[in-house]
Image (tube, rainbow, N blue to C red; front, top):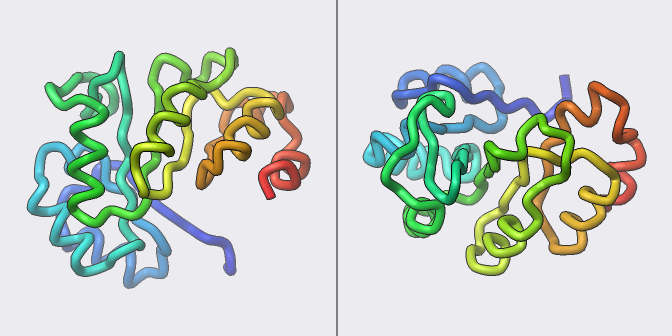
Length: 165
């Protein structure tokens, strides 16, 4: 397929990243391991550059790991600063408190992060209306994940793509 395919979840070593890239996956998302194994993250970024993204899940300003079951002692700011220093180009940032709630996304968080850091940030969690898409687009957010809003028809995908252009 010509679709841009990415994969994430449980990726903990370079061998796994190698297999996905060799299979044609265009971007590999590293989550928990970006917090627990910085050496692995740096190796992956050095080898694959912008084919590596990092998923950062935020719970009350702190980074959550292991499928949101544990909150680390690393703040959102500290994590983003480390990722920028390590050469990460793309970060998928999820505000856990907003995810799936269909009550709007955390525009303040994404505005802050996009102004402070030079990485491509993809907003995730709570994007539930075309107004959210418009607001994220206005702040030059690199992208947004539309999950439940698409499944429930709260957002028309074609309209969202048009608005985000």
